[in-house]
Amino acid sequence: MDDSKKGVTDWAATNRRNTVRLGYWTFAWVATMAVATFGPRYVWDFASLPTMLGLLVYLGTGFGMIVANGRYLRGLDELHKKIFLDAGALTLGVGLVCGLGYELLGNVKLIAFEPEISHLVILMCLTFLAGLIVGHRKYQ
Amino acid sequence: MKNRLKVLRAEKDWTQAQLASELDVSRQTVNAIEKGKFDPSLPLAFKVARLFGMSIEDVFQDEAEH
Image (cartoon, rainbow over all chains, first blue to last red; front, side, top):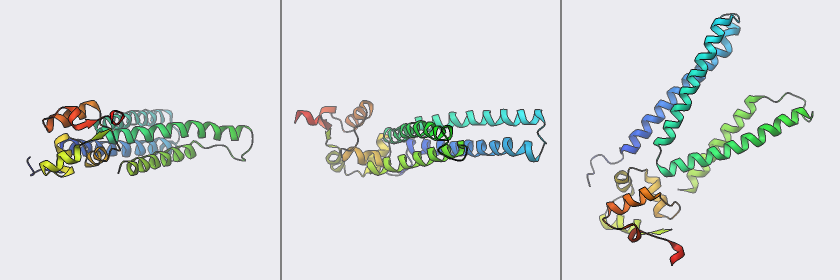
């Protein structure tokens, strides 16, 4: 076996490339969301055309991020793919159950404030992160 | 599912990282398979068997049979 390039396998190189690509797309998505959110208010005073353009760019970049995420997932080896999908399934379940439950709390006036979508996004991010950590520890 | 991956790797004097490189998977995957925590897919099991010049049954054994 050739020992000269151990640690830099095709799998590792592909994974690194896909991770960087996903990072760029995610950064671009967050940036376009910031532009679409704050642009109308602070830059172009809610003019329709730039607002629509900002929204279209945001959606396009979001679609690019989704594609990059799919490519990242397909580039993982089978164990990491399993860990990723398990964490995704957990996040989907938690997001659905807690999201609808949270909305229900607002509808039946058990909470004094309006449910915020950002709270659900934070919960889903934390759930996914916890799922990844648990998965990696499980297969250590 | 039990397997002889660790023994076969040791016979070749390979590290987990070297075996992972040959199989084009992560070192963590090799480690999880060796410890029996993760069962590889059929294509990966074939790849392992091919690498060691054996049949799948020589490398992996169904625990229900023993």
